[in-house]
Amino acid sequence: MALLIVTLTQCNENDESLTDTVKFSENDPFKSTITPSQNFEIDPNQDNVVEGNNGTTIVCPKGCFLNSNGEEVTENVKIELAEALSLQDMILSNLTTTSDGKPLETDGMIYLNATSNGKQLKINKAKPVYIEIPTPARKPDMKAYKGVRDENGNMNWIEPKKIEQFLIPVDLDLLDFLPEGFQAEVDKGMPYKSYKVSTQSLTDSLYYSLSVSDGRELIKGFEKTDYNEPLYNLKSKVVNGKYTEESYESEGPKPVPSPFQVEDTLPLVDSVFVGNCGIDPAIIKVIKSKKYQNTLISTREFETRLQVIFKTCRNDILEIYIRNINKNLYELDSMVYSLLDGNQYYEAFYNFSQQRLTNVKGADRYAKLLKGYYNKELKKVKSELEKNKKKLIVSLQKENAEVKKLADNYRGLLWKREKYRMEKYGFKWTETGWINIDKGIETRHRCDQDQDDIKVSVENGKDFDQVYCYVFFKSIRSLYRLNTTDNINFFPGNSVDRSMWTPCSKPATLISIGYKNEVPSIAVKEFMTDNAKINLALSSSTMEQVKGIISQYDNNVVENRISKDLEFMKEFYKEKIRQKELIKESNFIKRLWAIANPCCG
View 1 (tube, rainbow, N blue to C red):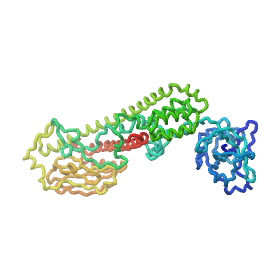
View 2 (cartoon, rainbow, N blue to C red):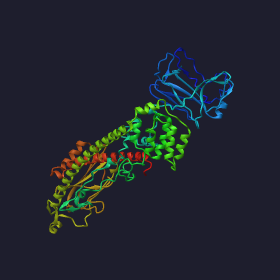
View 3 (cartoon, rainbow, N blue to C red):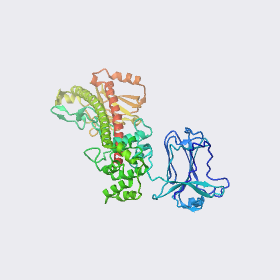
View 4 (cartoon, rainbow, N blue to C red):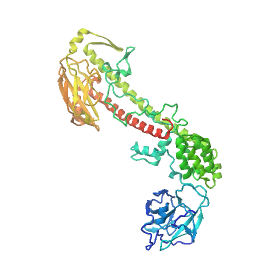
């Protein structure tokens, strides 16, 4: 027989008085060796689950505790739990297994009590506490006994109650219907968007979304954000007399290291949810609904099986339980292990079937109520998830289109800037590209090859989020933005050649502008084009001061104005941040997808 020391008083309509429950008396000779108590504090205004160190589970529904007036307790409740599940604990606690002198067989004993502000509480019979004691296997005809302990530590077990063989439903919100490791991965991904820490609603939402999304749609259609004049770029190419869009792509600062690097480790599949990759999260969303409350789906026993079902990656296995909720659990276990013959999880379900677990009360009634519900609701859930995904994609496409428009405008400005300078150098220009170079004019406007190319080092460049260096050629009133791959070393042209056409032995001005959290710094240096190795450090400034300085070099055509170029740089920087955040989010979703789909790797 199962022995249960549940000395917590039960509600009695005819007796409003409460006697304090004590674990042992002051003179108990075993008080120094009796199994120790574990104390928990819970909020009785919500459902709670208390788990003992040795595996005892106490489910306390909202409103399950009453005070001496029979009123539901609203202030915090102290739960005292002592577990005696081993022979050693029983001996040291003198927990003899006899009932009025008759021997009993035990599967475990516990002591349970509840108080609030030091006052004894009782259990509400309308909302009873659910107690689950770990046992290797359920035995027939087991009963729960109330324990009475005298001053000398002697135990007597009285008032036996038959343990119902029905499964006991638990609030669905208290059950873990997530794959192993999923919650831990969500916690690792915090902060996420506006969430500093994970919540149950966030975790569920992320999991359900994996039914239709693996995160890759977040990073589709990105526009490049690093552009410069096309002539010198490594990808420069003229097709049908025009520069290609790729011709404008320059080499910006190197990407921020992980987690912003794209993780492309997912298998190539035709759709996000693929059969046998994992359990479809949409199915879990359906059965986690209140419709399945009080069915076998809302039991700890099904929760245990679900964790193994996740590992099988087979929706047909899960649907055996969903579509047959009127059958006994051991019958469903048998159906599953027959289907899994030869599978590595065959033994797990065979062992489940040997537990001979039945069903909840009224299973047939719930089965009738849910007839046809599953298929209809699954279709609805999938449709809602797809709708949300499409809404997100439309929003992302709109943002990408706006950036594409920005990039098109900037490429147009760069084309005009390059055209202006090269015509000053003597190139013959048409609207469709370069025709040729007038060699006579070239020697008058470009220095010999032995002149050093421009090299700039911004000593404190690494201290800034953004750094831009502009060369203003006074003799031709032309602007050129230098390239960089690290915000420290700046150069003309591309990272390989690092050279460009420049006026020979002419005065020029270098204007360097940096931003840290949108706070500007600036440095200005005059130089001669034949002595173009420049070292400088940015000094803190204000926006007004920066505007005042660059205005001195803005009395030119629009394409040669620093202020105009900075307008584009500001927007491109915002886009870089947006893309980095989306890449980070995409990687996060991909990691969650991999956990939810363990059979596709």
